Length: 382
Image 1: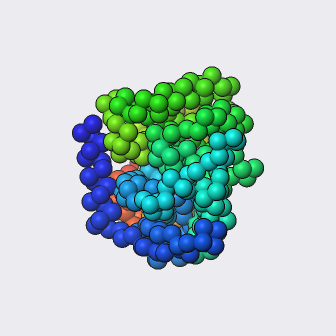
Image 2: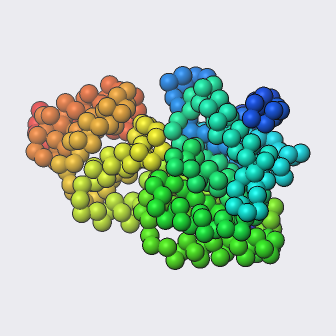
Image 3: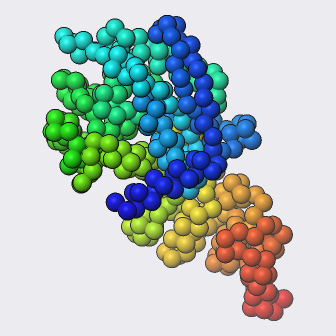
């Protein structure tokens, strides 16, 4: 619990210190009224003119926007998720009408239907036209709005791929409808949470829904996450659920961990180099974002290669590192290691010399590269 509180405090400090919300009034034809928006752009949005960003749409923006935006800024700072555009819709006076559904089909009705069309037909197209948005879109809601966001899941081509449902107050047939859709969904992330001190009806439905999902046949193209937080309430679970949801959704985006290194890379019988390449191809497919391979991921993979003496994999790894990070020593070091271990000392020495001229990085320094060159010269009397 203390860790969660510290994380929330850190997020609040992060957002107040380094980012600033943009406040916009959006005139909706569907609603025949203006809606107040809060928008947080990534830190270097103006500088990275060629970069696109996922969009996280937050309902109940009056109180949910800040904790979501703070967590997004914090997680993306540490590269645990991509930098993202966070947009909140203020609903303090309108949330009951916005989430209205009929009591026959339990589908959006009256103002609820208009609000649904406002998001899908007006707001999201506006954001795509105004900002550099990526393919991935996530939507967040709490109790009434957590139920409402599921209506977007039922469209043939959902505009959202991620759903964060915090303490959802489900409409009567909603659990069955969601389970039916998720059983065959592709590239969808769905998170829901309740807590021991949540409202009894909400907690009961959330637990029953999780049991329904566990009983379904496994769908590898759908990612479902559920939490029942101990000693949290209907409101305090929000502070714990948001980071948990982001961790789950962006699990494949995070750097290679010590656990992955020990449990996956070291015992891997197939190509460790291919694992790295496939990992980034997978995240590009999942999140619609092409990104530079991290230096730390190169180091994790190369360490596993060296431990397992798969020396032939250092050559393609070195060439890839030069392509991804041409201004640093890394790729030339891997090529030098490859040539050294495969009996070509002259090529190894040349590779280390080429790396010596470039910028230092991680454990690689000019002195280290020079030592590698001098050792080869000493060994062969050159």
